[in-house]
Image (cartoon, rainbow, N blue to C red; front, side):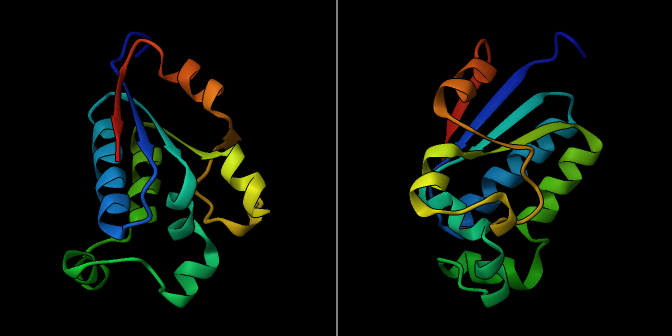
Length: 131
């Protein structure tokens, strides 16, 4: 899979519907043979905080409420994509730094904490989606 198509997703929204959509698209793309990099930045990191999951304090609309009740949670989708395809999940170094968060504060789906420059180096030559 050296020449597999590349998809990079920039997730900047904390809205559960967007987090779920990015996780679903990323995992399905990975399981379909694409090399996927998901860069979680700014407020999008909030749903990935262990505290947010424990409190179920997600920012959500009607669809998000139904997703919480009826669908696999976004981190499960990402774990499946990582196990069955080539999916890497990265936390934004800047957002982590300004908020004082560490990887221990986050759900265990992240491969690394990187900056924007490193992410664009990974994304080079592929498609980029922003959510």
